[in-house]
Length: 198
Length: 327
Image 1 (cartoon, rainbow over the protein chains, first blue to last red):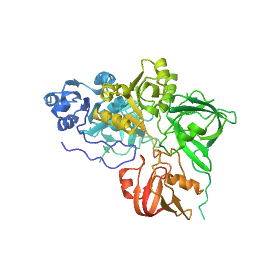
Image 2 (cartoon, rainbow over the protein chains, first blue to last red):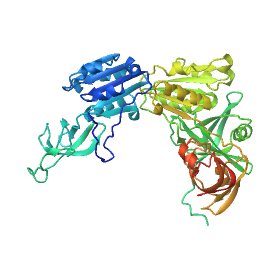
Image 3 (cartoon, chains in turn yellow, cyan):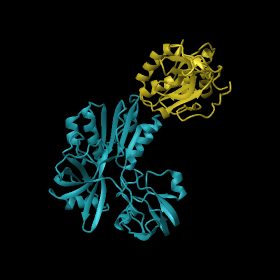
Image 4 (cartoon, rainbow over the protein chains, first blue to last red):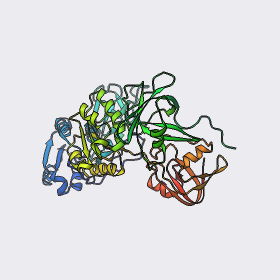
């Protein structure tokens, strides 16, 4: 699967990289869905010797391929939220020299970046690699509710039901893009829905 | 005509009285200061330094020293000065000329070596007189019961300034190593296995700083978690001529003088903060130069050094016909 080229945007929009092997005492990989491909691309026997893979399959069948890399630890979680206690525990036990590799959707990488930085990993030391869906994790600026995996613009807030315009303004704290009411001035006058990158 | 200057460059000055001169070891003396106007000193954070102005005959020496007093006590600033007999003379002046009751001038503190307070733990590596900034940092962290440890290398127990005080107060946090007893800081052992979010700080000889940085990076530490401070004394060198295009002057920088000091001697207002090649404040554009720039700073990037377009007048020199700078 080829990588999606995000169009140029404003400064607050995150820029994702490409995973590369680094020297370190241990290696933590957190990925969802097609993010598994980035792990497969970067994996070496040395990394996997002290590697811990936390994988959220989201209906993909990469789990066996990841297991075949023979990491020291492998965990498959049903969702990011279900995997979060494990991610927090791994980070709280971790020592300096831990390398963090995040891959998959923007929502996963953003949220896992927050966990790693609050555990003491500087943001610049966290590697990311976007793979798979370009859907966004959105926060409604009106009700503050999050809507995951938004693919269209505008979309309907899953909490308050407003029609929201998908913006590129991104909050690192919330790991979400901002959704703003699109028909506030003229309720019901909602532009036709299209894909975010169409 | 020189360009009009709104304010004089460099940090604001504080008039002080030397309130105590306390010998600490054979080579190290502590100088304590109180403000002449009787008010409190500006607050500072651990790792900050002040530039001490010394009136040595007609010559004004300006040397940076780390503040080592407790940041919670603003009635006093204290520095500890190691006498460098082969140095440029500032430390020898402090040791031989400065007496209790003398009037001196300090600059407002500037911190280029501050604690990263997001850290889960702080590890300090000190070599010799490099202990001074850590004394203030420890004072600051102790106020909030901070998580820290100190590894301090010294030649002998007699030379280890403040080691006795530190060991008595913090016996479980302070580790001292004497090279006379063939002891070295076991860098790899200390740095390995530290909790995620640890920050390391090194101050002392270049060998110690490089050792800490290289060992940490080799263990997979992010570069941003290793902090260091090394004040460079301006190197001596052959005199050279400098054309100052804004001031419309040509000056000669003496053998034992820095370009910054020569600018100040000529009454040219030049910005500075650290005077040790670290802060970047004095960065100056080179207009032309038939010769070679001798870069000694930690500030400019390698490409900038190679470009020949920038110079840090506090520590760097020039060899050649004539240097022309934008000052």
